[in-house]
Length: 217
Length: 88
Image (cartoon, rainbow over all chains, first blue to last red; front, side, top):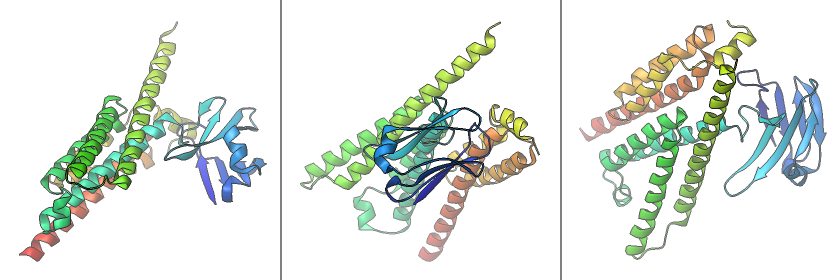
């Protein structure tokens, strides 16, 4: 039903493969093509967390995290999140930055189409030059998010909260019903961005710890 | 081609200036789209350099993003060109 390949260290080859069937059953961990462990308890067992002993003696922990908007595998080795896993802070930051660039592109595309084509639907949705400029702002925030700053995803999150509030107020004042689906999408965006802000802070903390160690005699 | 250890060490370095510039141009490309073409070219150049081992591997993500956003800008220029041509 699914599989995921991960490296054991940053920049390393993706030696570890996790695969699973329907309902997270037949969960198999393979390292360098050799099976390390399997379990058939499905989601219930994975949610409790499972440990596997790797050939080099290190301990691999796999935990299924499911919450609002996201289901993912937290994979760590001796307590450190594996690069590329759903809980790896660097991966969370990259995901948020990619999301921002995607949103920038979407806004820009709709804005350009609105300018080229006379569409009542797009006009009513407020698409046009404004959405192109919005796309630029979001792209810039995406750039700084990718650089690992904490402020950029927070600002982007605040921007989308404001956008959501404006949408609700605008709809209600027009006598319409709040667009629930659009609000759910915005909630997902905001959660992703604030998760990235937290992840950026964690990366900075690790960098500072690393710098501190190197300065010690 | 770097050995695995060297590649891992190289990943500890910051992305090269070209990788950073590629993404900057790709981002600025949201104004007018043409700068995005520069980002696209720089992105491809950086990826080639990384594969040769001539640039830090940490820039790969930057270069891939710049390349992808650059292609978006190419698509936007095509859409605008078609739109203007059809209206004309």
